[in-house]
Image 1 (cartoon, rainbow, N blue to C red):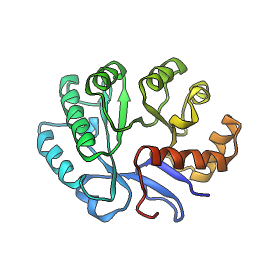
Image 2 (cartoon, rainbow, N blue to C red):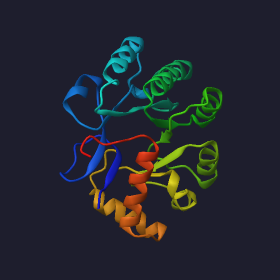
Image 3 (cartoon, one colour):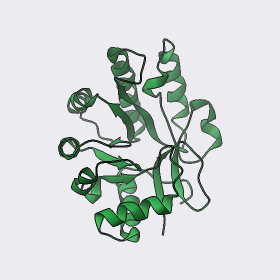
Length: 212
């Protein structure tokens, strides 16, 4: 059974497939990564950082763009600047035909507007989704995918169609197998069925792991 972690900040145990969120300067050394400029890391040098990310993101080991997005609480950058940075990531995602992994805190309205305006061909995935079922349904209706970590709204998880679901651990230390078992139990499906679902969703989003 192949277990996939869509978004983590830590290298994992052998035998699992994972997308490691990685700084651009380390992009050459690791398989199966995503790179982007986190809202917390936006400063006056962001245009240069985006240029560096754009160069590194062309390589085969980069599977997704991000995490990037809007954080009205944790970022020191203005909402306007965060939006400009996000637009650069959207353009890169479309140019390279790689999905976008999004970090969203109090920024749903901006994300929905950008999604509607840009009409992306690539998947947009909300990582670490903790919102209420109503918010989940708004994202799903617009075509988004939702990725669930270890902290989430149970009703939101239950309302998420399997074909729009991802699993991640972010910075948590729980084993991936245990996380899959926990999610599968809530969904009343087997861990095997969940794993097959996540693998299929990765393929649907154009994510092909280097180890395959």
